[in-house]
Image (cartoon, rainbow, N blue to C red):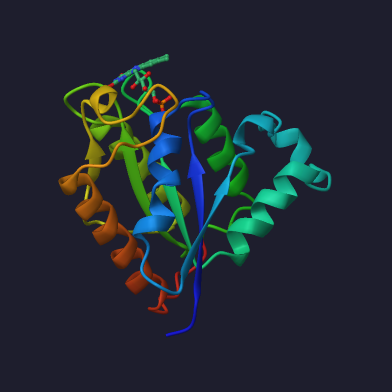
Length: 191
Ligand SMILES: Cc1cc2nc3c(=O)[nH]c(=O)nc-3n(C[C@H](O)[C@H](O)[C@H](O)COP(=O)(O)O)c2cc1C
């Protein structure tokens, strides 16, 4: 199997974000041959505006689209804000969803995960995220569901994941699942 490149997006701009910390822990858990690049530019993207679509894409948007296009798979760690995903993540997904029929996420293997201090560990935000990705026609990994609940006990004050057996096993399964999906050629019709 040839080497695989995954791009990891996180929906929190918080310095000590648990979701960012979760993604930072992934390279140590990744199967050999998998590299993971963290993208930290969602907060710098302009707000999506359909009027801008008639112009060349803003440089930051073009860069993100290029990174997604070049990746074999994408990981998205979402915080839960008001039972949904964050504005910065939604804004990034809106940019990535266009142009219609030529989105770089069309058919792209995507795995979702999330961490929150609540008992539900971003389950509601992940449902929203899956719905958005379904609309964009990304290929979303169904299993495992990585909902890291009571996250305040699993990260230090800097947002570093402290590590626990169950979460690490699930993260490993998520990476293996994304790896398998990335090696399977599934073509998705454009609408
Ligand atoms: C505007 C806002 C809304 C939130 N709403 C929810 C929520 O609906 N459910 C939840 O579990 N946590 C909610 N939280 C708490 C976040 O889950 C918590 O701040 C979490 O640490 C954010 O992720 P991060 O650590 O990656 O920044 C909310 C936080 C903010 C700032």
